[in-house]
Image 1 (spheres, helix red, strand yellow):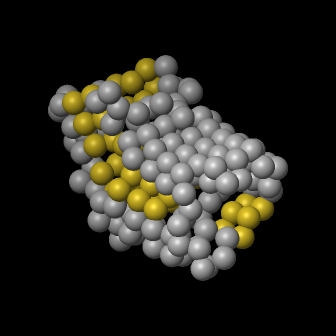
Image 2 (cartoon, rainbow, N blue to C red):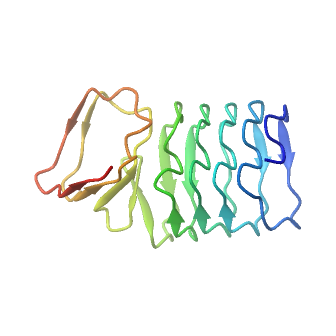
Length: 173
């Protein structure tokens, strides 16, 4: 936790950095702007946990993996864009405290994930992985969805009713 709870507002990480370890920026509540080097292939567990003022982040093109709670409690984060090379996202990478999240977007070239109706889903659109926090009060899960990730709805605040499709097979915990 190199910079844990530091009052840093902006970070420009040099391109020579290839690894940022677990929790490196945990609790940097004032952080609003960060530049992550293109060589970073994994955002480790809790790397940006509690960066409450972080509104957006440009994930590096070389990124392949996002760990547990990597963006947990990033209360101001509005959008998350998943690049073309990301192939592994922890089921709890975005599972806590993303109170301002409006949508997930995914590069069309990504072969593992897609975004549909602002949700993060598997490429085959059969599994919902994450739902943004700012959604309608009645949530209709589209036909074709067979599985729901255990943490998919953990950030939702406004949903009062969920309408399930007839072909839903599994709700994970």
